Image 1 (cartoon, rainbow, N blue to C red):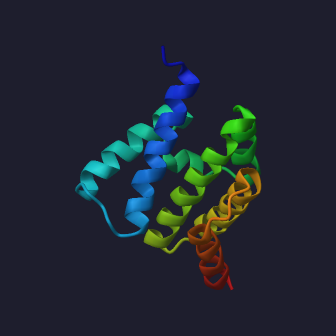
Image 2: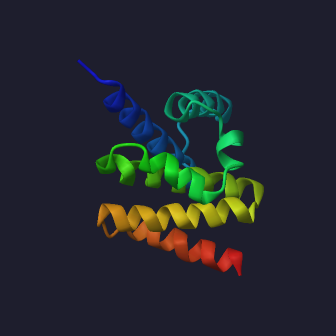
Image 3: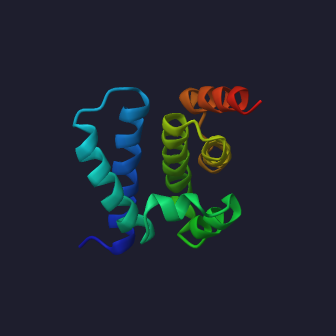
Length: 130
Protein backbone atom coordinates (compact mmCIF):
# COMPACT_ATOMS: atom_id res chain seq x y z
CA UNK A 1 0.00 0.00 0.00
CA UNK A 2 1.36 3.39 -0.99
CA UNK A 3 1.49 5.99 1.77
CA UNK A 4 0.90 9.71 1.28
CA UNK A 5 4.62 10.37 1.75
CA UNK A 6 5.57 7.82 -0.93
CA UNK A 7 2.95 9.24 -3.27
CA UNK A 8 4.18 12.80 -2.73
CA UNK A 9 7.78 11.70 -3.28
CA UNK A 10 6.75 10.04 -6.54
CA UNK A 11 5.02 13.28 -7.62
CA UNK A 12 8.15 15.27 -6.75
CA UNK A 13 10.31 12.97 -8.88
CA UNK A 14 7.78 13.14 -11.72
CA UNK A 15 7.81 16.94 -11.63
CA UNK A 16 11.62 16.98 -11.43
CA UNK A 17 11.87 14.79 -14.54
CA UNK A 18 9.35 16.89 -16.46
CA UNK A 19 11.24 20.09 -15.57
CA UNK A 20 14.57 18.51 -16.55
CA UNK A 21 13.14 17.73 -19.98
CA UNK A 22 11.88 21.30 -20.34
CA UNK A 23 15.21 22.74 -19.15
CA UNK A 24 17.07 20.57 -21.65
CA UNK A 25 14.58 21.61 -24.35
CA UNK A 26 13.31 18.06 -24.84
CA UNK A 27 9.61 18.26 -23.99
CA UNK A 28 7.66 15.20 -25.01
CA UNK A 29 4.22 16.74 -24.66
CA UNK A 30 2.72 20.05 -25.62
CA UNK A 31 3.53 22.92 -23.27
CA UNK A 32 -0.17 23.37 -22.56
CA UNK A 33 -0.41 19.80 -21.25
CA UNK A 34 2.75 20.34 -19.18
CA UNK A 35 1.26 23.49 -17.63
CA UNK A 36 -1.90 21.64 -16.64
CA UNK A 37 0.12 18.78 -15.16
CA UNK A 38 2.51 21.27 -13.58
CA UNK A 39 -0.22 23.12 -11.69
CA UNK A 40 -1.91 19.92 -10.49
CA UNK A 41 1.44 18.50 -9.35
CA UNK A 42 2.22 21.73 -7.49
CA UNK A 43 -1.11 21.56 -5.67
CA UNK A 44 -0.64 17.86 -4.86
CA UNK A 45 2.87 18.43 -3.49
CA UNK A 46 2.52 21.77 -1.70
CA UNK A 47 -1.26 22.25 -1.44
CA UNK A 48 -0.93 25.57 -3.33
CA UNK A 49 0.12 26.78 -6.77
CA UNK A 50 3.46 28.09 -8.04
CA UNK A 51 2.37 31.73 -7.73
CA UNK A 52 1.82 31.25 -4.00
CA UNK A 53 5.07 29.32 -3.59
CA UNK A 54 7.12 31.83 -5.55
CA UNK A 55 5.82 34.71 -3.44
CA UNK A 56 7.30 33.15 -0.30
CA UNK A 57 10.85 34.04 0.81
CA UNK A 58 13.52 31.35 0.46
CA UNK A 59 13.66 30.85 4.22
CA UNK A 60 9.95 30.05 4.40
CA UNK A 61 10.21 27.55 1.53
CA UNK A 62 13.17 25.90 3.29
CA UNK A 63 11.01 25.64 6.44
CA UNK A 64 8.30 23.90 4.39
CA UNK A 65 10.89 21.39 3.14
CA UNK A 66 12.29 20.89 6.64
CA UNK A 67 8.81 19.93 7.87
CA UNK A 68 9.01 16.90 5.57
CA UNK A 69 11.07 13.79 6.27
CA UNK A 70 14.76 14.63 6.23
CA UNK A 71 15.63 11.80 3.83
CA UNK A 72 13.34 13.40 1.21
CA UNK A 73 14.83 16.91 1.43
CA UNK A 74 17.25 16.35 -1.44
CA UNK A 75 14.35 15.48 -3.76
CA UNK A 76 12.48 18.62 -2.74
CA UNK A 77 15.56 20.80 -3.24
CA UNK A 78 16.32 19.36 -6.67
CA UNK A 79 12.72 19.85 -7.75
CA UNK A 80 12.61 23.40 -6.34
CA UNK A 81 15.90 24.25 -8.05
CA UNK A 82 14.54 23.03 -11.39
CA UNK A 83 11.22 24.77 -10.80
CA UNK A 84 12.70 28.18 -10.07
CA UNK A 85 15.46 27.78 -12.69
CA UNK A 86 12.98 26.98 -15.46
CA UNK A 87 10.55 29.75 -14.48
CA UNK A 88 13.39 32.23 -13.89
CA UNK A 89 14.81 31.57 -17.35
CA UNK A 90 11.38 31.79 -18.99
CA UNK A 91 10.47 35.10 -17.35
CA UNK A 92 14.00 36.51 -16.88
CA UNK A 93 13.18 36.82 -13.16
CA UNK A 94 16.33 37.34 -11.05
CA UNK A 95 14.49 36.52 -7.80
CA UNK A 96 13.52 33.10 -9.21
CA UNK A 97 17.09 32.52 -10.39
CA UNK A 98 18.42 33.45 -6.94
CA UNK A 99 16.00 30.97 -5.36
CA UNK A 100 17.06 28.32 -7.89
CA UNK A 101 20.71 28.86 -6.95
CA UNK A 102 19.91 28.47 -3.25
CA UNK A 103 17.88 25.29 -3.77
CA UNK A 104 20.47 23.77 -6.10
CA UNK A 105 23.19 24.46 -3.51
CA UNK A 106 21.03 22.86 -0.81
CA UNK A 107 20.44 19.89 -3.12
CA UNK A 108 24.18 19.38 -3.56
CA UNK A 109 24.74 19.66 0.21
CA UNK A 110 21.95 17.28 1.25
CA UNK A 111 22.43 14.71 -1.50
CA UNK A 112 26.20 14.40 -1.39
CA UNK A 113 26.04 13.87 -5.14
CA UNK A 114 28.47 15.49 -7.57
CA UNK A 115 25.97 16.64 -10.19
CA UNK A 116 27.81 18.46 -12.96
CA UNK A 117 24.62 19.72 -14.71
CA UNK A 118 23.49 21.31 -11.43
CA UNK A 119 26.94 22.80 -10.79
CA UNK A 120 26.90 24.24 -14.32
CA UNK A 121 23.45 25.75 -13.74
CA UNK A 122 24.65 27.37 -10.51
CA UNK A 123 27.56 28.93 -12.42
CA UNK A 124 25.19 30.13 -15.13
CA UNK A 125 22.86 31.64 -12.53
CA UNK A 126 25.72 33.42 -10.75
CA UNK A 127 26.72 35.07 -14.04
CA UNK A 128 23.11 36.08 -14.73
CA UNK A 129 22.81 37.61 -11.24
CA UNK A 130 25.96 39.74 -11.57
